[in-house]
Image (cartoon, rainbow, N blue to C red; front, side):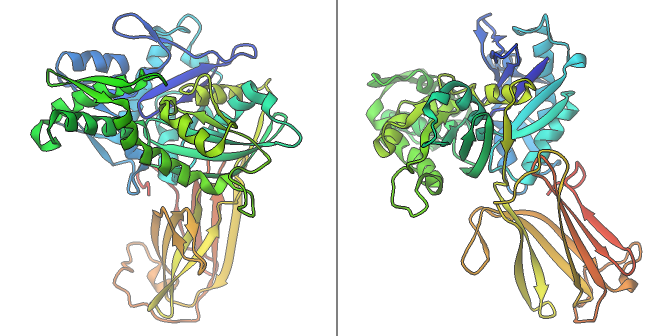
Length: 506
């Protein structure tokens, strides 16, 4: 059996390959009703962590529930030792993810619509996803968690890239010889992504990707909660955390049941019944949608910037659970016209696309690009200044198999090199990184052979100019868009390597 799994901020969705069809897997909730998702939640029940629907049941019985823990992956300093507070316990984020995905695997095998057929030990391949703008540590930890949980991961795709497959599968009629590109607008529970995809039959090439790591359905829930507090004449300081979390749950449920005809939203705050006009909620939520539109703006225009929507774009395809809010397609259509389409399965679009990618008989191909550049700040002028060297730009293609290798060779001009590696979203005219900058690693490399002995402390060495050895920098980019760095003194063979791992994740 081949699966596509979209590990989401609020819900995880699974689709499978079934003779050219890609049905979504359902799981029974506490009431026995089938739901086409597995909740992305964890609860501390006594001394035991529970996940998914079990966590929701435990929370109803008083256990502490944590939602949206996936959002912690987007932090710039996240690593394998980052912790999440669950009740009175600090849990390593990686361990929490492994536990959650392990519970998902168990549910697939014992309590899902495919339990009679799914055997984890015999599963052929699983394709998983990350946000298009995910940084290296985010990608590494996601992949590591799936593998530790026992899934046989065959590929990891960017979420909107996967949704592009689902678009072609369902909306191929909108593509023509004149309109060959589509923008995937992916507004999920915790993140926003947009990718411009060029389509030729079943061949897909990512032209560019942009996104926001901290914009999603959770933020719309918070906006509605603000409206509710205002209607009650209260502020956040007037209620405790448990009451606020209960309000957020109520807001999430009410938001997901809004229709274009809705005029009022009924909510409950600590036993008090409240009514929020939909117009008030939409007024507060409009800046969030506008932020997403502003983020994807560079993908929308013609190259000369003269068109609101480039003439060769077949459409803007709305996916992700939060895109189901009626305000979202309304604002996009007001701006971009009739070429805005909403997936019939917005919350499952990515999972379906991942299943298509897992289907060897489907014949779909993907040429993807890095969504972040990769570069290094170097010491210059005997350590008195710093210069930036963009090693890899966002135009770099990600290999389907193997690695892309980039090497630099030069003669060292100092006795010690101080490399500050970063991932970035853009550079300014002077070549300096701007926008969303994420630290990757710092490496102090001694070019002086006397400093290359085991245990030598180079942190206190005065940096001075020298006629140093020939040095090689080697950068390897794998099929998941993760970079590995190796620096070598070619005279002595001394090497320092940095690769994301459970002991050293940037």
